[in-house]
Length: 355
Ligand code: F0G
Image 1 (cartoon, rainbow, N blue to C red):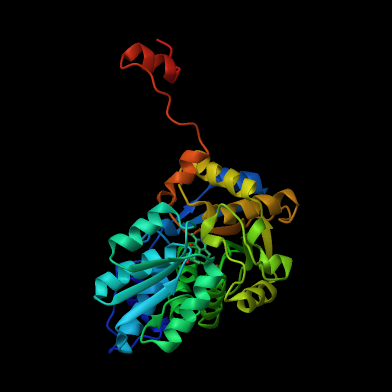
Image 2 (image 1 turned 180 degrees about the vertical axis):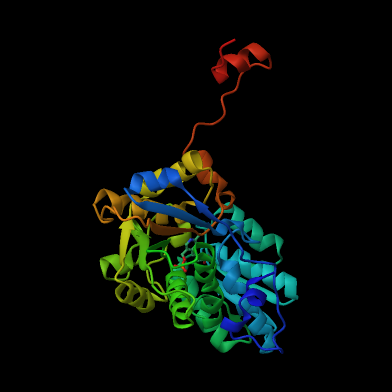
């Protein structure tokens, strides 16, 4: 069952909406004791592994709603700017529904897996000599002047779909978490999760709200630095954004929840990226590791007070995209396989086994 079917009562869906779904959502919430131990006494860390959505990222939750509504409203084409995942998702849902998909991306700044997805699903992929922010302003103008629906997260239907992530977290835990950590790029997802938690609370499904903890990459941290970044830099290409579309909404989520938006360096991101793969068994793309890098940083600063009460506190980190999206990064930051002659002795010696 996809998110529209599961959470129809919370979404702007009518009997007339043609539901375009790839059975997105329903992703696991994985307990990560190895991370909890590094946070401190009385905390449990949970990982919402969004890499297990149909196209390998959280974008599918919003895309099912945005594409279904675009078709209901008579659009023959959709368009987006993207750092990769939005384009992969848009291309897949467009293929599923038979409409045209136009994708504008920053040249040379998209992880290989994501580019492969947009291409294989048959999107019209156009790379520009510019960054994501340039791509987004082109696509906004394009969708104003031509007959194509914008499916970036400024489209409110994207936010509507993505808020189902918070419903699932609350449904799994049986309550809202105490803290909710996630990477921030264009700032749609933090907006969506905060909206979802608030709606669940007003419907009486949960009786508290989490503190929202957003993390930007240090070289692309406009919200933290307080100004637009003209030439954003980070190896976490998914969140390499200098002028987030939902800037104001992200600040509102931070302030209303009593949370924070901070930045993590590329080194901190890579450390968390390797920790997740080595110590937890979960492979994510670098941007996703920012949510974990962020809570590691805050724990070191003493942000999480010791919790001696009988009730443990829950921290949820959203792991937004699958590690296979960006295989180059994994290989770049590790040793290549050792090559030996084709005999057992050599392999045993290299494996460090003792007979
Ligand atoms: N993590 C991943 C893996 C992403 O792809 C993105 C955004 C984010 C985090 C940040 O989410 O923008 O809602 O704050 N990717 C967009 C894209 C920009 O084009 O795929 P956000």
